[in-house]
Image 1: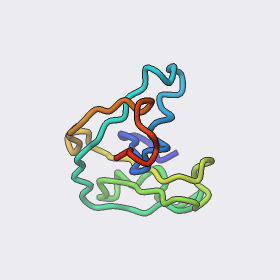
Image 2 (image 1 turned 120 degrees about the horizontal axis):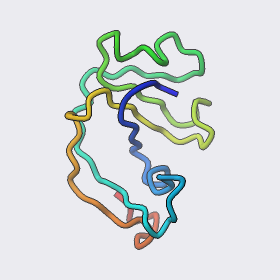
Image 3 (image 1 turned 180 degrees about the vertical axis):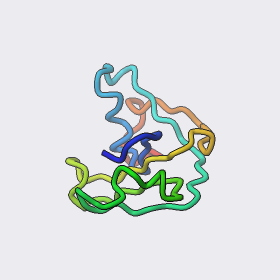
Image 4 (image 1 turned 45 degrees about the vertical axis):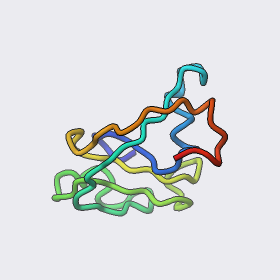
Length: 102
């Protein structure tokens, strides 16, 4: 949807759904520290920079919640360079109720 990069979400409910092809018991949520750098908001299908934001000086593309870009209506980000991401914690989502998710 946003081209190349590492896809992340600030919404734990979205994160706990992935990867789709793995049994939920084996899934983990990674808490991250991300240097987002210069961010481009992509809030509609067909946005002029939807797949080219990386070549226009942006480090992160952000899809806001409920903008029609994602079927779930949840927010997501795409980080161009994986070196901007540091894993700070790994959690087992099935052991945490949604209210206790980071």
